[in-house]
Length: 109
Ligand SMILES: [Zn+2]
Ligand SMILES: [Zn+2]
Image 1 (cartoon, rainbow, N blue to C red):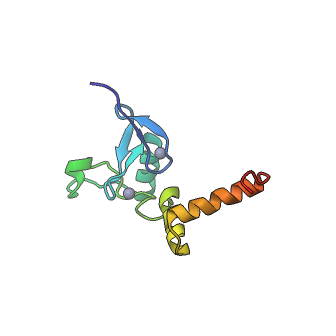
Image 2: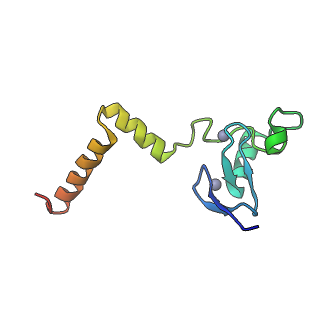
Image 3: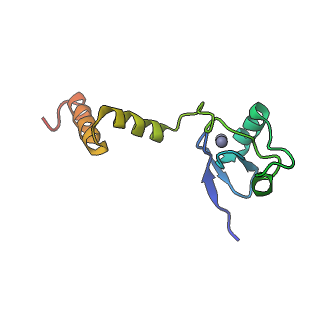
């Protein structure tokens, strides 16, 4: 049995699965120990008898900043913004590269 490492869904910190960590019982995001504690303190725990307590434990957080929308996933947000521009991700990337290049003295100009 090896140790696996995961990224916390909120702070993106890397933690080992054998260390202290926990789940959000609502959106099922795996959280590092720090965020797990913070979310339980803020939003409470699932509690005994909750339908998901069997899967995630009765002390899993009842919800977290991800499912309340408080925490914004930068990648998901970027996709959202790109969609609003009506351009494809590739088009936006190309434009961005051009902008970076021109800022850096116009390598491509
Ligand atoms: Zn975290
Ligand atoms: Zn959540």
